Image (cartoon, rainbow, N blue to C red; front, side, top):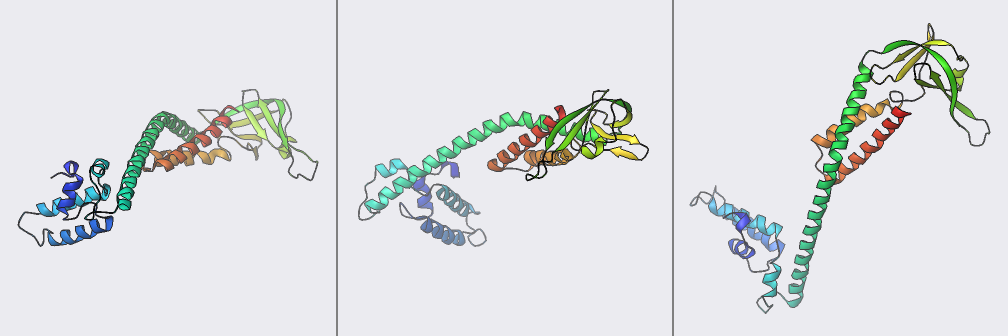
Length: 270
């Protein structure tokens, strides 16, 4: 008999138990009968008895209490459980059904949420793959001229000091912005012609040559400091789609990917 067609009463009968048997009694009965009717010992039915015992135990393991309807139609007497035990089992059956409904609702919520997140993560995947390709491709060398030096922002490195440390953005005639610190600004003049190394696809600045053996590197950017986000995001997306089964962990990884990719997009348009 298939376990999908078993009833509580049938499973109890197969395991030779009384109605409302406890979980411990169910386990003990299963062990006793499974040992007795194991195919290696009991060879009269080609293992059918052992199979039905296993199915009955699996059913009762998931449904250890009688159905509510059965409890309503039965009255506790001296041969069954006490009134307290009767109410206790009814309570746990109701609680089990409520938990099952909540679990089903949560599964539906996750299913809907992951369906919405999936296309977003695919876009993030393609974006990071393109960034990785852009970084690995040969760089472009281009002669550029500094047309403006802009104060990007300032910060104080010591809260007890009034000294301000400025960061600057060099605006180049090809449309690129190159961010440098206070130490580097002294070697830059407006109108000076320099050689820029930039990526082939997104044209992100990598290096600025100011003399034969002197290069400036941007203080931060898609490939400087935050460049580590590219392999991290690629790894997290692969793990998300291929290996994760736990919904809570999947949601955490998805939120983390959204945050890190938003940082990348901010640097991209900055």
